[in-house]
Length: 251
Image (tube, rainbow, N blue to C red; front, side, top):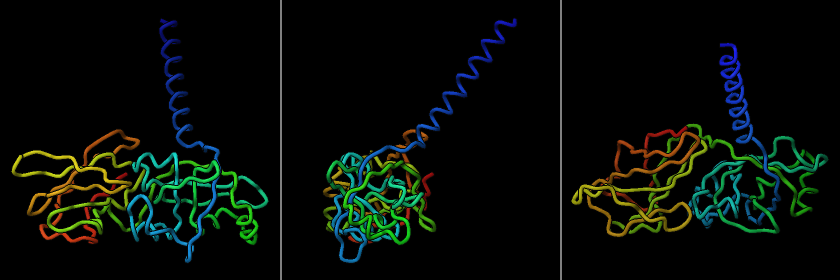
């Protein structure tokens, strides 16, 4: 009896320890390097490889970045990270929270930051000194994206051509979530059909069905993989450049 109780206590302790290690590993920082790119207004670029256009320039108040390994063939678009440099005399304790909007490779860097984001790495009054380094040692971790006042939205990409070609981008994807697939409903076939990842965060479909277009998307996050289907469809007269509310908040 006493032996069995000891075994149960031991197993419970092991489970608690494993949970603690898992939580810790999700919150630890990874060491790397970061640099910055030129921008006339210090914001992001509207021509980023994620295909976000103007959203990619101004989202998160322009605190955005291009990444290389973290791009993951476009799946990494829209992910949020805390980035902080590691030279105490120059670097702010909290660093900066950024949104991935582009692909970019540097000198063994994982992040190429917008000038606004790079400036936030620095302590007050030493911003110019940090810019003079060009490349800095950093540590980073993934964090939840937060967009106060916004639901996830479907933006019809500017390259769309009504009614023969539909391309969409999902924006304001909150939490630590990746969009790994998008499908539309074909009423004539009575089935869901996959949209193609054209590039970055852009999903497209040639000859989309007429009428309202029902969409669903696959989310991969801390709670696993699931399909999410908004109640409202894209309107039958969808327009290139327009954004449509999904009324969904991911967590």
